Image (cartoon, rainbow, N blue to C red):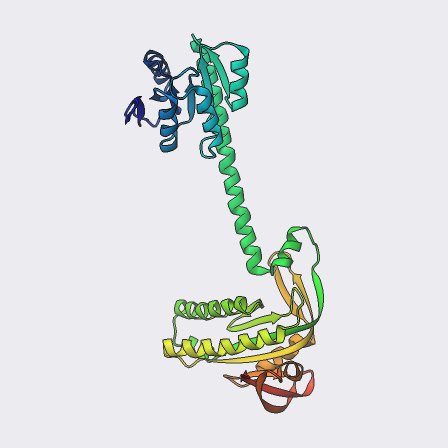
Length: 368
């Protein structure tokens, strides 16, 4: 450890050992008083440091650790009042307890020190038993406060972790409602656009790839897709194996969800093309999109999930499963929303399970 023995330098005073009860800084311009207090406190098991004036004390406290300050009032250059004021004004130092030991025994001096933030006040000449008791009490309070701060930091870290997990599972407005105690979350949206995407060729790739490499590869692809969903202002709903589901137009309704989903679908195709080139692979992405009303809500009690229901979801799923690898198949409702600004190829009528014959279109690009 270090001490401030001469006005211009830091020098060692006592080695801090594992049995030390704490580090105490003595601030007094009288060398005899400092040495007397040092010997008494070292015998009690404390590590003791000395500063001959207020300026040196603040310099030390900003550079080194101390658990308690024993402070004289009447000192040259900077008195104890100024030391207290600066100490308590510094966020990094204000919680260090201060016991004033002064020859001033008038009531106004005590009041001023307490108002400036002193934890206790002793008169000179001090009573050793009383000094030991006051030092012990102040250090106990500090240790309890430090422990409380540590627990608060742990709680805050856990709160942030919980917040992060919630926002990775739910859209922010839904997460906020859950945090505020909502028991059931179910919302109807008159207009939304749903997209399903499936990696064609991934199952065959799994037969010749290690499990670790396969999961790493799928994770890399989905990380790209996650970023695209953020970039286009969409909500990722879930992944199912090598399939990816995303929606636009909720949980906050807006008018341009079909365009956002179309732009993301085109960007996903470009992403897979680059991925194939980088990894020398032949994966294809089959995408299906539909627009219309949906119901969205939170289900589950142990493993929560935010999911969608309704004809629009089923049709989007069928657009994907009945689609063509490497293509983006959309329903008539989505085509009508986008045909003025995007390029399509008419695929014709397809028989959609549960819905019968439906006209379908292939999204191929955006009009310039």
